[in-house]
Image (cartoon, rainbow, N blue to C red; front, side):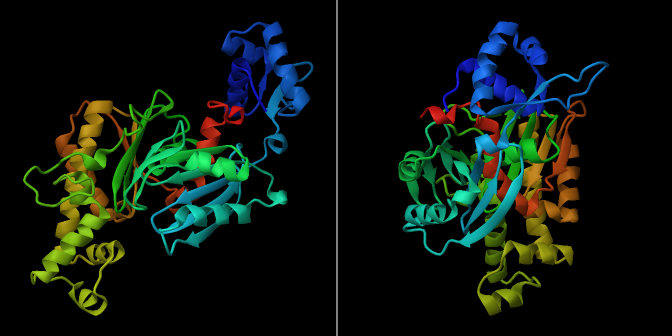
Length: 388
């Protein structure tokens, strides 16, 4: 498939509207009826677009509307590469998700070969896969599919798109996980009508993604949204994965909270987690949140300090971008006491005139299923991926 610029604009409009008449396409795109016919006829002939007579009528014959042909466009093989697992999903550009499964990552030394093996296993004929979408943690140039850097996998300048396209002869899209989260919120959650919003993801790392004017912001060099590496405490001795000290990620991520708890318990500060640490040698963020829920003093103190720091970072986002909505993703925000702490601190530091909506994402674990599917939904007619 090879589409002209006008055809891509038309296909994007049909995708967004679900169904639309030729007349409305002409009006919205400013094209003549002749130009519309010239562009649409090949799309109908190839089967990418279908005519449908189910449109709403104001009297008389129902208008013929155009819809995308899901069968012709095929399905998407989505892959979310997390630090510990591969999440595989199969869906389509209409937002249907047909299946999903998880593979545990046991060894990161030969991860590309492991990835190829999984893809090969998933590319059965009955799945009708026509696009592969890969989402992962790290700095990603989504235009050329190059992973610029990922500390989790110790990868640097890896051309994942070309590697996978050569192997499987299918178009491949590659995107950063937090930017993909914004797309999932856009296409699968409550932000469909919101043109300006920010997703803040807090896990072992911290990152954000930004939707401005209805489009995803990548920034110069594809490193917009790296709020986790903004220095929040210049006097801090805590070193971040980026090499700096006092970064938001080093002060308030899940990993930072666990590390602080570990250090303070080792210094004989009392916590109900002391016994668990003695028995297992480790504590997890789930343990800390459970202890907060039971009002363990040390856990509550450490997690509250992290929430206050996160609130100040959100204040920066609000002051610079003035978004309609901030969407919070992460286990910390599920704990009501900590979420209320965040909201109270935000009320203290933001201006009364700054209006925003603060919500916790309800996609939860499904976000890794939706992420790669949403990347294709967003880009399929923007990047003309079949032309490569």
